Image (cartoon, rainbow, N blue to C red; front, side, top):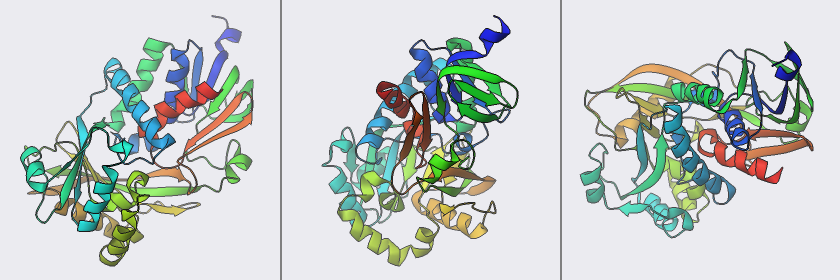
Length: 376
């Protein structure tokens, strides 16, 4: 290949997080010659700091839920091909309050509840003994969810895209300007017929003026890795009442208003920190636990111990844990909008700017990418 040919592509993707990789995969599947340019030497952003929880049930009705359903299907195909282990499947959401149960009952009559079950506590206890169900009102079980280990899955996906699908990766190379068909990086001038920009939290760089018009904020969240007692096993991913006023598939239901009013009285501090419980398990038995949500133009990277204490309190109330020793703490960061779960902007006919603005990148990116190419 000549030097000139090595700099020309059908598609250039800016950003090697899950949103960028999903677009690279979708384009490669269509036979396009693809290059992914990533400023860091490896992906170290939001895509490796999350739960690796491909969440379908509870996503907002309409495009977000539809994209999550499709993304889950693609993950089911891609993960085994790329050597990515599905650590566990399914979701267990415990309703501890009568108003939380009312939300789940409303959810169960929506089309989004297809395949789900609303279990009595005794039924859930028989199938999921790790759940702490004293005083529980009911448990939603969804079979649709899948969990991968984010820290390794993103790197494995990128490697597979390079080795099996011919995607060219240029790591450690900042993109300075996009003027399709030209993409100027810190090292070269690249060329492509089309460009997709997936720069996640970089709101003040490429296309900053267009991004600013959407009034995005950044969201900082707390995450923990917890070591339970040996032999402890989760039946799947776990959520609780606070999730019902955060995930739009539940929170937009009429019954959620009464639940929110009750939680504002009983869990005001947790709500103030944007806390809702998610627990997943890794292959080594450790639990990834979170999370919280703090918003701003530049959230400070300092983790308040009180927030972690609140998260761990919800963990202890949700599971039959003998011990829960924290072994790691970290923060994540993603762009956030109160208007949309995903921003798809068109600077020109050959360029797309795609930012997931709801923290649902792992859950929806493959579905988003298919929509972008279908409409292009």
